[in-house]
Image 1 (cartoon, rainbow, N blue to C red):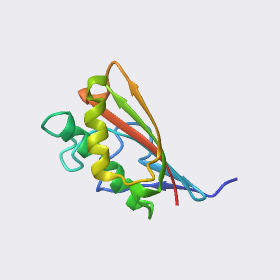
Image 2: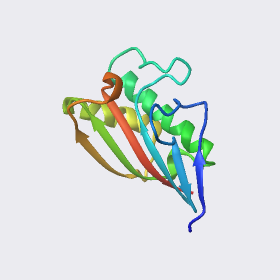
Image 3: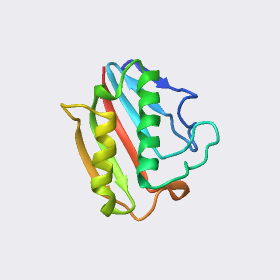
Image 4: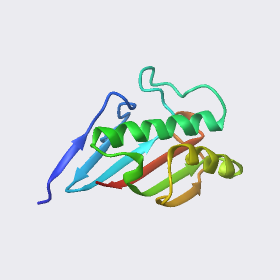
Length: 127
């Protein structure tokens, strides 16, 4: 059986379902999807798509840090957008949080996300 630990922090939104914020197995951390919830109010942040994207990456960063890692340790990032016309904006915002070499990534257009969010991201981190 692998060494498994649940990662939890109050600096990111609490899980709103039957899942953990992240699970660490040996030196790999699987981060659950983050939507743009403010961790204190548990409400979607106000503002445009860029504001939501920033909150998503802030939430991911908080979970990475709770696992003793950073956004720079992310090796795979999956992005979900309800409107693919925001693709260039997500690239701009992502550049505020990540440096080269960038993680492997997928960007997928979806019909809708929980709580009416415009953006969600999940990741795999190796530390």
